[in-house]
Length: 294
Image (cartoon, rainbow, N blue to C red; front, side, top):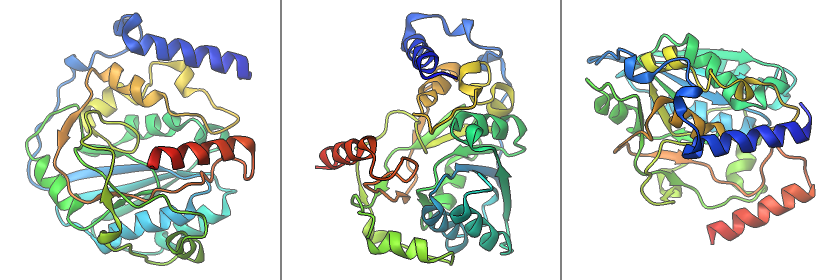
């Protein structure tokens, strides 16, 4: 898709999502008509992560599932990746050999053009999940001590279409040579970041967005993840900004219910590995992230 067409369509859907057009024009399924089970007992959870050039972050994420294993969920850990991304494949090969009770590793290789539009993989996972709940997240999120245990308790008997953590914790903005990132690159191995390294940031969340979208399985299977908007299911030549997060909430008709879930942690970092190193765009993004952090 040419850059001009991409920009025009992206702007069009951002305007539509803002309420200028009826959402019914863009839905194949009205979420209000979807019957949602209110499950209790031991629940199943699918965690869906995309990873491009972030093998060192993925090491920490997968480690957190092992280090803080919960017996309250049956977990499927789905990672979308590109087979040629050696840093990532080393990590999933390492963890794939590890048998962890209650965890099923689910590695999903995509052509990079499909990985670059995150909603493509999320939609595939949503339509095919067998889980009671599905958490759309990113590779820099860590499920620290008591995070998943508490989530399982909070989800008992609920049928919300979408929930999200009220508070998130994050590291300071880490430079590329920070010890945490260096250890991640030295792996793969089981790693841990002490909880004291994470502090609340961004204030209470009012919307489920980015890596904090926990969706009811029945809604995911029925509606997919922006499944009815072709633009968000079109491969891209570069990593795309994730405007579809907002479109997803619009399509399923909710910003999400905030839940008190402790220790949802994020490794915050200055340099985005998915962009070209030393490019002007990378420099500008680094400057903006530093300014926002201050």
